[in-house]
Length: 175
Image (cartoon, rainbow, N blue to C red; front, side):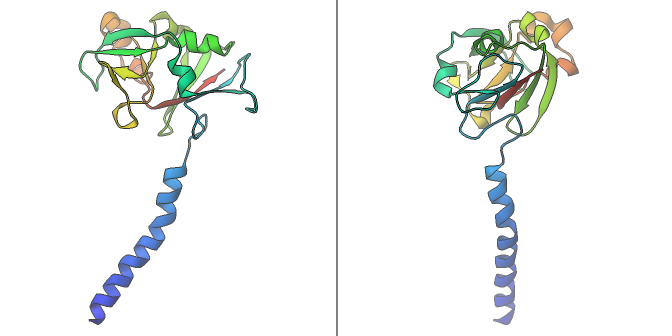
């Protein structure tokens, strides 16, 4: 009986110690992203949202209302698929982006810097669906940076280019 009580108290103590860690993990939002905002664009931009200090906080509804394009390609993680979303150039145009370097920020705190012209050259889309199915956080979403890898294998089938295929995109910093 005594062993059972000690064992139960041990598990209770572990739970109490781990609770703050799990609560903080659920609330953590990486730099460049904001909780309850679909896409945050910061940096050298000419248009900001009211109440957002030097940032444009794009709602999901606003993002989904933008004209879309389709990129049909495979990735190291997916078979050949149709990825649909607005062109990156259109999204950057919406905020009057003035910089030439971008930092793409994902929900998991991954970020990468890339030349904006490089991504725009290939018709990069910010995909919200794959083969007609809306992307979720568990499936590369809600936004997956996508360009036609299969059409430009020499240029885009490289480790560096793969790092620009950011999934769970939540922020863009324009430099």
